[in-house]
Image 1 (cartoon, rainbow, N blue to C red):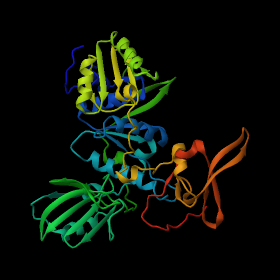
Image 2: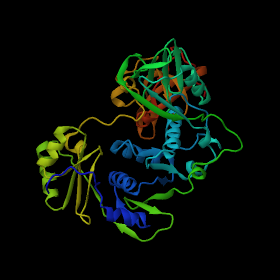
Image 3: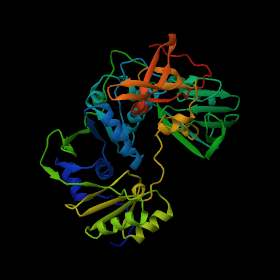
Image 4: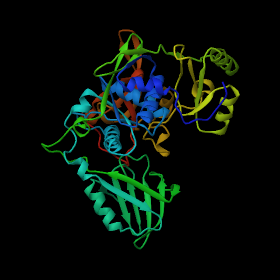
Length: 434
């Protein structure tokens, strides 16, 4: 296959058009589904809701999608009914605000939802009319006082320095702003009422990481709640809703009113051999039997050259595993599987907070007695070490977390995904009560 750098997607326009006209698609893998939905959104040029039956599955698939392309997919979780847990619930707030604003934008998006999050009355009724636009450009006249008024109207809180999303700081001729749906805060430097510089900065060191010329964003106050709240579906009644289900070990993407079904019989491309030469040999063998061969990797020159050398068309992005469909004569190979580069970062992690925020088995050795940890269900506590507990299968290791009034929670090592380091700015934060 002659290598060519083309804007067209992995999937054919013909297949996508059949789906748009009502045909369901079965036999998908998660990675294949993410790529298909990206191609569909780009061709369809309209927003789509992808509905799951629970939040865990929805978030898990969103992470697959966001890894592939972070400029197309949105995730709209439901409002949590439990008490807010510091360090976790801000993430849900960021996802929700990003989705509401993104669906109001000009570009088409694929928004991942659940039945509950799509229909619950959790959005201020006047949200569309209350959206405020912020536009900054170096050299333009811009009143910092008026910008602060707009920030206050959008629900931002004022602080001495900006460390967390949803805050701003005004110090003389410098205005720092950290939008909830931004990964990092930014700084506006004024010369009287004219913008002299705009920069992205590191919230912990407060040092500039990138200088830019222009910056625009929209925001609204998401804290207001009244009897006139509406649902996401009420704001966008014309957006198509597609359902995700399982048929055996394969995934089905279906319409509410199905007009036929197309089974693509995808299988994952698993490259487990430790030898890179043998992994490449397997890819070469698989590619001989297909007409459409793609290599998905990072936007760097060596990947473009590599895809040309193996006879594949290059696609910018990242997926965990490739996929193969003999019915479509289609093979997609993943850079991650071939070369095992580092795992993707969490969506909201900024540069500083990538170091050890999430706890896994490898990070346990870096914890010391007295470190602050946050449990997704129980909140902020104090790390007291790893202990052995009796279970039906014998003794097992657990993380011991101390809460107020000397209460204890033991987290088994297979549940470490529910725990992360405290990332707030207070040196002595208030410990949660059970």
